[in-house]
Image (cartoon, rainbow, N blue to C red; front, top):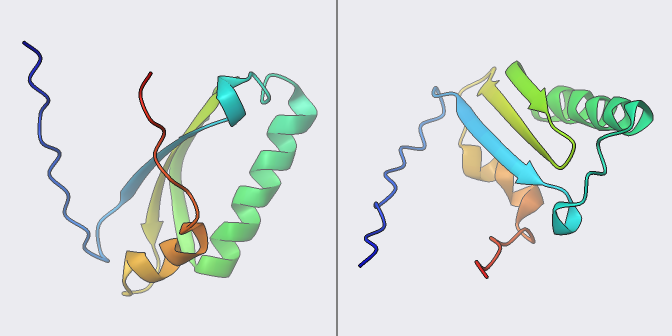
Length: 92
């Protein structure tokens, strides 16, 4: 029997947020340097637009991990509304 652990979340505006996301169909789209550079330019544009600091990031060939922290006190849900069309993947 497999028991999944319940994930506890605490979404306070003063907390850092760890984000992980994958490329389409887990393809290694970020393997090439120009693609990684393009991603980092987009991350920087989002950082300036949504006023958050990037504390750390790891760009892997098929996915990215980012640790961000808001510069001003506001709700993370407002910033995340731009990604409201993103849905979790179904496990196969």
